[in-house]
Image (cartoon, rainbow, N blue to C red; front, side, top):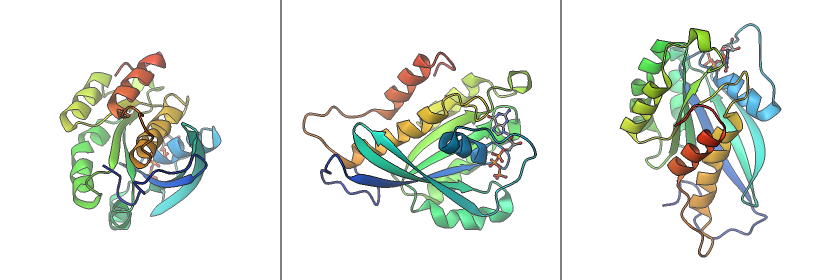
Length: 211
Ligand SMILES: Nc1nc2c(ncn2[C@@H]2O[C@H](COP(=O)(O)OP(=O)(O)OP(=O)(O)O)[C@@H](O)[C@H]2O)c(=O)[nH]1
């Protein structure tokens, strides 16, 4: 099934596929830092400045020979901006839903985020759960197994990330870009791309955070 807003016809290999990806999750889980790490390869250390409303950045990737432009929306996690973010859900092709492994409340709120996603996002939106800040091992309060269990319950792919060290950041964005590219481009005899399997294999290959 093609993602909403995506062309389902065959595209030429040099076509620029434009996709919208939205980062959601509680305030402070690291959405802005994840985006900056992916876009600029840097970590925003220092004081925490909450996103106001919504911000976005573009990054072009080459996925299986196809140029894919990701427009990434960084939403504000604070409750008072919720009505702003609601308006963007329906145009998102993919959602990265984050919690912070050092903050139990952010994990407990995932269910509420999923309810919101169910209400506002497109039915076939590509969704992935990310447990961020795994570099802070000494402060960890959410076990990897708990993240895996929750993700399994909801049937979404899962990985742990660190915007600080860069762990799995590129992988998270590449995986969703691949899924969306495969949904919109059907090359003859191409095997079906399986996001869950890809994520499991790549996370295992990264030497961390077996999924
Ligand atoms: N140790 C560690 N700290 C992180 C990581 N990612 C983000 N942080 C820190 O967490 C704080 C919040 O990060 P942000 O990226 O601004 O959080 P946010 O989710 O965008 O927050 P809102 O804009 O309020 O929704 C900052 O102090 C970051 O430096 C990470 O992977 N590891």
